[in-house]
Length: 221
Image 1 (tube, rainbow, N blue to C red):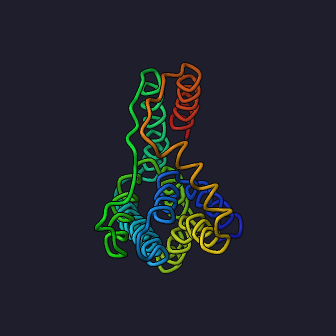
Image 2: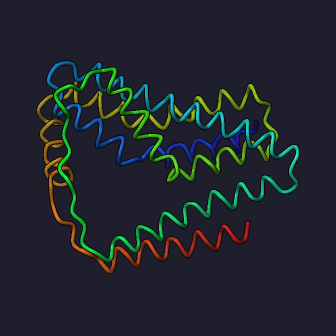
């Protein structure tokens, strides 16, 4: 485990942590919790952390076993990570060409810290196919031949970095009071209310070009 490898994985984790879905969930909890916003938000973060760590560990162990028995397994893992990212970008490009109705989001009355943890598991697991930085980080650990105990620690730290923006948002929301809550309400009114999202050729073109670039990387690696 070198400093260069650690730095690259830290950068991938930081990129992966900028996840709108988890940040929106924390915002909703802060704005809509009827009882215990701190406990519910921490429950969500724990669920997200456990999902990222355990699924990543399972993927690492499985890929490590495959790499020892299948020739070129690491190359295909790398191509799969970039290929999956390209598919996500192309699908987003197509979706941007038609109007979409966005449903309003809010917390149900039965929301508790336990169900918040379950929500963290479900939302993070559903979003994992888009987490191509994580696949690249696992591939780099495998390619570097990092010992399994060290890889487990690195994956745990990756999951912690993934959850860091949620924890920062939670701390700001609870400590700064109405100033931060007002900003979160404006964000929720802008992105969390029911609305029709118009088609955008510019947005579609941006996603398409991103997909082409990532495809080129997938083919060349």
